[in-house]
Image (cartoon, rainbow, N blue to C red):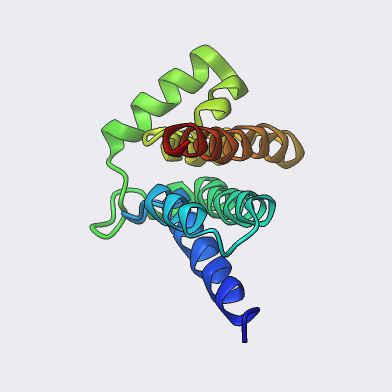
Length: 148
């Protein structure tokens, strides 16, 4: 029965991290910190599962960006033309390196723009994986440091 709690917790972490990386209004940090402080889930697994969920959520944004022109301007589309133009401007100026900010609240726009700009998928995944995993590792370190 002990294995069920961590598995359920990790599934919840995956879903929260996945949702947080998409255009949906999710936050994964609270779930991550709660699970870390709960101590029932290995920190390595917690970072790995959160990172994987967040990376896959960003990949959904990338795919959306590949076909955004088909959906742009529809009422249900969650990104405005102004937001897309602003992100494209950043991307045009700073290039793929903006993907290192994909962990930030505004970083989801960069992952959509990366798809629009046809960034090679392998490069997208390398940069986003580095950024997303780094964020969860830093969050784990900060939580551990704050709680002694």
